[in-house]
Length: 190
Image (cartoon, rainbow, N blue to C red):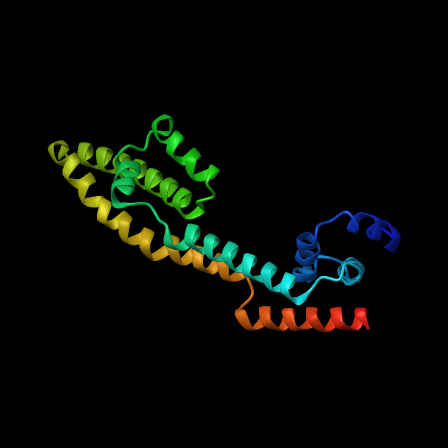
């Protein structure tokens, strides 16, 4: 079992930002860990200005996360590329770049369009062959893209928004946590 002394040794080597992360995510840590982090912040004489800068940095990080996961989606050309050229060996390098740059929505969309394009291509090919409409394969496949586009806009994006809402508290909860942090810091310093 981790003792208070173990945590104190470990936390004295952490940066102010890491300690503030522990305090800000107190539900992810034990009560003892949060208490030791608050005590260490109190020992370091962290100012309200430092905490304000920390909060501003977190807001910027959050806005970047929202930008990458809700706002920045694939362009229409990219959506068409993944829909009509779904072969993994060709699209792998594009998807790898999305992973490296942390564009979760773009990666989801790329996989979605690749799978939707592949499945509709197979269904239309077999369906048109069975119904002896082989001359219309390409036309039916082209007409299936708007359906894929609609479902992407409706479900992928809404799913990402729900996921982000679960990951981050509402602004009122965040303000309450920050006020609590100031109160605990004042209690320690007095």
